[in-house]
Length: 382
Image 1: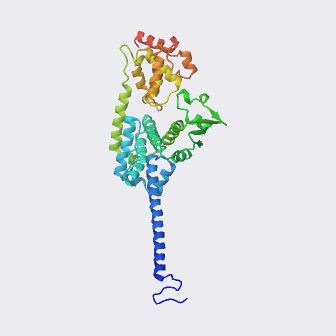
Image 2: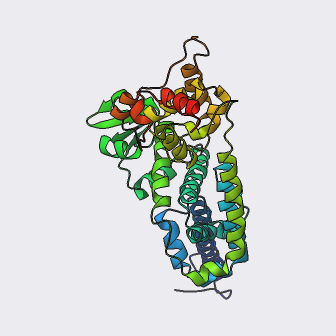
Image 3: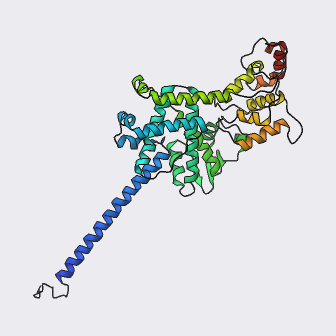
């Protein structure tokens, strides 16, 4: 093809123009590649931060493994150790491990690595009350974060459900949950609204609003977190963490002392409580979710021997499903605050029917009611 002296083709397209076009194309291609890489980086960063809020997810464990973090790396990380101790102490003090504001990838990594470290600290102490309280505090913290995340992105609830083995069907403002999953995950939810007979069902599946479903997911998160605790941590590792462990033990001792400080009215004597009531109180103090029948029994008993509504409510603050407004309503109802009719505690026969009669002693053989037991033991001064 004939060319002019300037190197342009006779079709009017100059080499300079062509080279410029080639360069422009390369520039566009390079820009697109850079944008894809940047987008991938942002995705990894977002994923990293996302996982640090839900560190019990399978993908969080995979991330830690793929990143090459070892147990030695974990133990030698000062920031992870400090944050891990904070997690456990926050669980003891407040019952909720708040998710912090994450400013950068380094903070996200510290938050993520502090979770397995916190599990090591809890496992070294090997206290059943601490294990339950820590697991519940982690689950509650994740629940609060999940509520926030759902305002802008509902994909996280799908990921959590799948990872936790919850077989839910989602539609706008409605979740369908197989009744087998529902029964398993609501076993420790004592409010009557969670009973299966009070739920609407479709094709063997329970209808739930999103807020209700998220509360059930909290139960699944608790199951995941408490699983395998305590871990089998070598003694040399626990010994190397003695300073952190001692601090946590002191906090735990303070918490236990506060729980034991239940105020009793003049003439009241916890040593005179019947075994059934003592057992329920011990479970409440230990953070164990007791059945509705037991809650009614201990509430009515304590109100009838002189404790106030507020004093009784304090007993439930350690419960996994504690809701102050709902608890106050129920306690005031039993106390007859509005109706003027105070309920009495169930009889021994009723306590046996509901499986709440435990550890009978010689006094139990002489009475038919928990309040009679209490009065008899006070009278005899034993």
